[in-house]
Structures are given as structure tokens and as C-alpha cells.
Amino acid sequence: MTLKATFIGLTAAAAMAAPAFAEYPDRTIELTIPAGAGGGTDTSARKLALLLEEKLGTSIAILNVGGGGGSVGASQFMQAKPDGYSLFATWNSPLTTVPQVQDVAYSLDSFTPIASTSETAYTLCVKTDFPATTGAEFLAELEANPGKYTYGNDGIGGTMQLAAERIFQAKGIDAVAIPFGGAGETLQNFLGGHVDIYGGSISTVLPYVESGEAKCPIVTSAADVPALEGASGLEALGLADKETLLWRAILGPKDMDPAVVEMLANVIDEAVNDPSYVEFLATKGEVPNVVKGDALGARLQSEYDALAEVSKALGL
Image 1 (cartoon, rainbow, N blue to C red):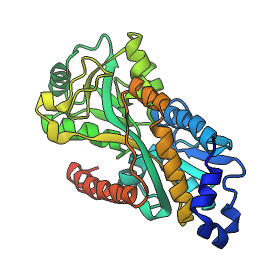
Image 2: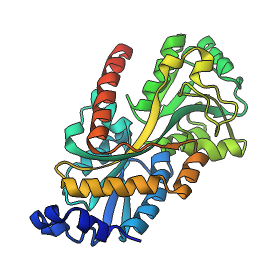
Image 3: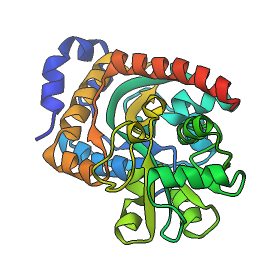
Image 4: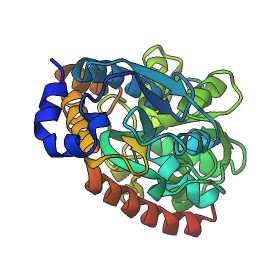
């Protein structure tokens, strides 16, 4: 079942004013992901795209544009036409954190917020021979060896680095941040031995935890995450106030037609809450989280403002 007929019925007035959208969508939609293939945002967006194709009755082409902690893809996407055929599947960091520490061409006003999709914690993981297993042991090992360990993250000043540094600052830990283009790139460098610690989304590293190639002593949420048995939530470590979450969203270019935005937000809501997608998210340690339109815009602005203060305090 598609939503074309429903869309026409609900937005007749808008269709009269903008006849180009009367049959929307009638061609392929391009979905830009500001990270390389294989990372958490990429795999989540590709799975969601399959459901959106069914519900929209059109094909969706995936375009991966990694680099700069997501800023390269965001900068390229902001130039797209606001015609509903260019969408942006991102995580929060490129929008709320990266612009504060990098000179980027875009701002929150460069995009049209459509709907968020899911949220989860970040995690810090090590190889199985690392001399610590629990969260407390992990932090103690880093604290006892200032400057010894490197950790990969999703870009300078990205949310992953911020999440880690909030914890490290609280414990007086000096670890060396190594930025990469996304969780997939971070993972490959971690597995290849180029960094000691993987810092990124749970979904990307989970298969390697399950295969016994990695262990994750800590997550950046206050609560434990069932998908990572044995990983300590921050509340158990006395650091609940240092919680930092990763969440994902679909946006469009600036000045999209409000009727198209509303239609897409509703379709995304349906897709995210489809039982198959909820189950998919659970296997990756994520949960559905849909915030639409102006409310999503307010969430982005609130997080941007809050992280600006934290970034300044941490000297990022």
C-alpha cells in the first residue's frame, strides 16, 4: 500500500497551490548519508529506506558522503533542491556539535527538520586482551596511564568525542582522540590495530562483540544497554549526569513544502514503528524515537545550545 492517494486527499489545497507535488513522489528519491558505508547511521538508514520505498511507492537511491565528522556530506546536501527528492539521513553530531568546532558552510537553518528515527548510547570498546573488563576497571586503567591509549571517534568535536571527554574529564583521564569519518571507519581502524579503543555507535561494533573480537566495558547512557551485556551504564559508575546519547533523523534542504514535510514525517513514523524495524533496532541496541517537524527543530536547537556550553568548558 502506498500513501500517494492519502497524501493527495489530505493536501488538496496545497496541491492546487503547488501542482508539481500532486503526484509526489513520482520518481527516485536520493538519500544522502554523511558517513561511509557500514556505520550505524548507514545500516539504519538503508534498512529504513527499504520500508520507505514500500510505503512511498518509489525507489530510494543511497549516496554516502563521508568525512569531517559528517560535515562534508552536510555541506554538499544543503545545496540540494527542496523538492522532496533529496533527503538527508544523519545522526545528531554533524548538526549539533561539529559546527561549533569546525568552520562549516551550514547551520541548523540550512535544513528542514522532518523526523527523528531512533536513539541509543555510544560505547567504548577494546580488544579482548585489554587489561580491563568492567567499566570501573576500564576507567582505572586509563586513569593510571595518561596519554598511553588512543580512541577513535566520529570527528573532531563530534558527539562521540564529546561523550568520551565528558567522562574522561570527570575522572581526570588523558586519552588521545583520533578522528575518523564515521563509525564504520573508526571500526576498521580499531580492528586493524591503529587505535586502542573504539568509540562509536553500538550497532557498528556489536557483531564483533558477539564474535569475541571486542569487548565493551562502558556505554554513554545512564542506564545499561541490554544489547551489550556486561557494559556499565554511567549511573553504575557514579557518572549519570555525564550521559550523552546518539540519535538519528531524516531532514531535507531548507524551504521544503510543508505539506511534503508532513507527509514524509508521517510515513517515516509508520516505517520506524513497523515491527520489523523495531526488531532491527533492538538487535543494534537502539529504540524508536520519532520527533517531527518543528518539535525536531526545537530539539536540534536545544541540543546545539547545551553542547555549545559543554564544548567550551572542555576546550574543544
